[in-house]
Length: 212
Image (cartoon, rainbow, N blue to C red; front, side, top):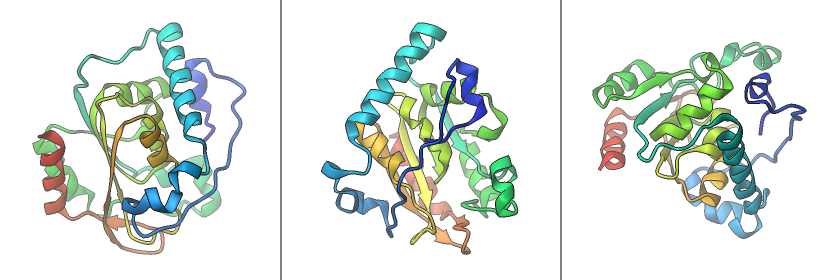
């Protein structure tokens, strides 16, 4: 998980960065084999413990609880991610951006998706989005760390190009450990920064499946 100043919004202090091993693979659909889920790089009980810890804190200290029925559908854009302070050392290079995002958004608006940039939100509001959403679509992103507090009925669809330069498996493991629906869709790889194009027809098909 990544340390960031925004987590102090919920009263958590003394956060330290924890570097997790990076995994490589052509398709997350083979994750169970690639990760050997019984011997993954983070014990699955850790994800269950963290979820319980966070949700108890959110309920007891902030009064946040899951709605009975999640009512949001969100798409997380990465079109501002290269501008973050931590990316300056990489010359603000764009990574894992959806290059045909305008076409993607046109489809999502037909289904009443909210388009959000996590960079624009406080930590509290980021958490609320995940707790209140029934469907979350996102290119592979550190923002998916928040799946640790996703609604139990939430369905998460992650987009990623084949043979990614950097692939972290903890988002899949987190959802697997906590019985949250998660699926990866392979996209067209545009360049070495893992920027991608999403197949619009496949996107719409997947949305209809998720909403059925």
